[in-house]
Length: 467
Image (cartoon, rainbow, N blue to C red; front, side, top):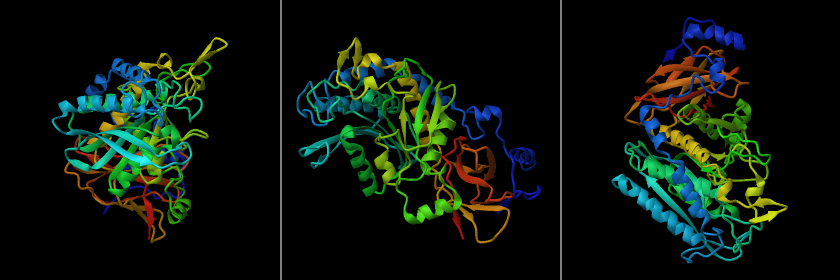
């Protein structure tokens, strides 16, 4: 058992006391620069990642958005067999493009249609085929560990049941689909440790149907999905009042898990873990690896599942206990989403490509790429993390299971004050599965993350109490 020694035991911590004692026990403490986004858990982008990010091309993203908008409507209830208009034409084009992107992969990337028939219900008046287009880049060392990124290719007009009017859906959500397709193109030639899944899903506007089907397929197959991101409305940096914020992307991450059981809720309430769900740890990880000069972006994490009265394709994954989060532009312009294309008193309405900011979408794509590549190349999130609570003591003993990755180098324990949102201290504990910290578990939050030989770190695992 590894144990920090040489310090007095602390049962009450203040920020000043934490800073004072940190040097004595070899901890990294948070600084003003850390609070601005370069915290002690941040990870510098390696050379290979920087090369990947430079390949993302806003002109290709723009061409994809304009091509998708040109199908007229991509409403889920529109034609599935018209070769030039409707959701079927869009589906077939996306499939052909992803297959073209997969050719240089040496067989590592496969592309398929994932279809089922949705029975009638709200917003689905007749049995309707829902089809996702999915490209899978198989990992080389941890192929059973999966990370998913998606956008939805269906669109809508003002009336959600109107499947004949033009609904170009440039921002909502051709922007997200174009981002996913560009990531698939750039990643196809790379070797990644874990498996990456790039998905263009359908049926979102009618009820998250495509994403729910995909998530359920993963669940039925007992897939180890350790992270999922949906990119929905990521096409513009301009708000409805004309102000611009081209260097910020919002990331929505829920606290109390949607899948939580009554037993899990009781544990969460007892330890105060409302801000430490797997999705919150995933969001903190994105900040660590993607809010830097390589992406040119700030990641604004919003601590809620989604916007008011809204929902996205990450929710079916959350409901099945998969960590998931949603990327959305910093401030929306509602004249250019869920609107018929028209002009009223000289003002243009409708979700048209002319209102998109394509360099902004490319930067959001870089944020996604940094997160996905870092997740795939690092060890997986530690399993079985526990805080031992059988004995009443003012120190904290943590245990966890050792991962099976061949490149696993060791582990780090992280901690923060209960009033902090980000991890502020890091302790290198080496290749161990147990560590004792001379701090009271009653006063701070702890976590554990894995470290690979390359230096890349996993997301943090929040420990549960164990008697």
